[in-house]
Length: 281
Image (cartoon, rainbow, N blue to C red; front, side):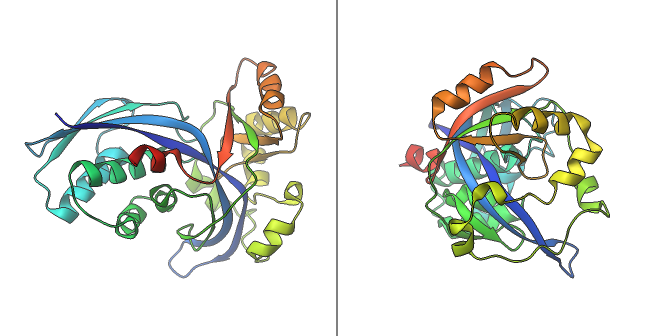
């Protein structure tokens, strides 16, 4: 049985602005996605009988809601493939943490099965499919840290300084729909350019969701306050993960050792090219 084992990396939003509310109910965003070298691990075993079977991982998520299963079905329908797959996931990224776990898993499935099933779709075609699953999926399909606009799908690859990050999960789940619906959310941020971002003091950048999330989830406010002792801390996505930047791995690890026991955390390096692309090649 042919198989592939591939990484599904995390991402951070180095800043996140809402610049307008769209007529279709969505919001226009500006953000920078930083891909990390810390990943879930997905094993795909090709089946000849067309059956899609989830073997391991995400047992708490119904199969019909599992983005890996949905991505597989979407690719199967798009290409009329007669193949199936056994999917196993080693879950290292926290679910609902705002670091792209589900979206990244789906993208890895699309890229991996495109190769395993010999579908022959281009990266652009796979990214279009991925957008049907979630706004962040095209980022992970394309595989580069990027400036993003639209709903997050209009991507421009960026070469970012490769910093070290300490990421903390405060063990709470944030409802993205609830945060987007909050009347206190800023929806008219000034639009900025890539050049302005690159020239800016990164510590001055903001995530417009952070204030709303801190008000609704005091555990996240406490985590941001604690981490801010060591470096500027901010929310990624709509949470619940927060992060801080460090110039050296050792410095980030020293803070991780001090992490209060009620939270989880990891240290990762920011990379410009996804580890998925290296694994596929």
